[in-house]
Every structure is written in structure tokens, then in C-alpha cells.
Image (cartoon, rainbow, N blue to C red; front, side, top):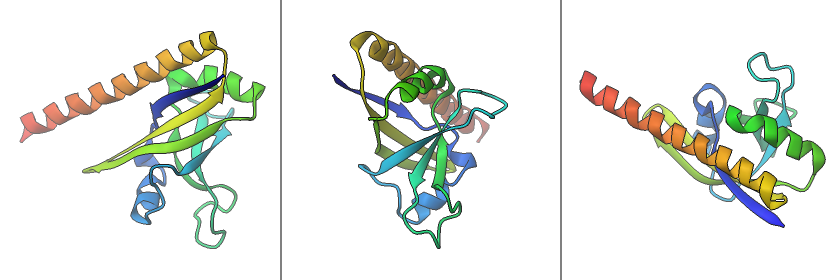
Length: 147
């Protein structure tokens, strides 16, 4: 059965998300691509999220396109296992925003999954989303109190 999981892309400030936003490439409905990064020293299950290469001559990375960021670490191990078992996944942008220096990009993953593994991954995505919102909220409070 087809299942949907919404989650934020992590690390957008450190990669090409700002450049992609400036060029108008990121919009709701844009299809994204996964790339496993097992050699990552912080998370051996790390999964990069890319905008697929559209124009070979203007892209910063000739092989992939724009690196937007990563799947939240809390989800990466289980999502890696799911991606290894199935090839029919679809990842699209559902929300984008620029809040000062911060860039928010939320995406929707569509997978074919039984309800129990889906429920576990869904709970992890929910945790990542709420952790991200709480971090954003506390940073906002800190910024206001320092002014």
C-alpha cells in the first residue's frame, strides 16, 4: 500500500539550497533524488537529498545537481533499509521558506510499505519535524531576548 511521510530536509544552510532557491529551482511538487553516503563520518546511514541535474552546464555538481541537505538522522537508518529493498519511491518538495538566514524545505516521501514499518518511520519523521520546529522556536526566542 502507498504511504506518505512528510519530513524536513536537514542542513539546508550548509549546502546548495540557498543557491537553488535564488535560481527559483525549488518549488512545491519538485521531484528530488536520494543518494546514500555510507562513508559519512557522522552517520554511516546518511542519505543526501538532491535536485536532479537539469542542465549540465550550469549545475555546481555535474553528476547530481544541487545538494539540498540530508534526511534527518533519526530516520536515516530505517529509510536506508527501505530504500535498499525497494526502488519505487517518490520524493517531492511540499514546502519551502526562507526565514532570514534559515532555509526550510519540507518534502513528502511516497513509498510502498506495510503498515508497521511505515508507522515506525512515520513516528520518526514526526519526531524530526517537531524537534526542528522546537529548535526554530527556541532560536527565535533567543534572538528576541538578545536584541
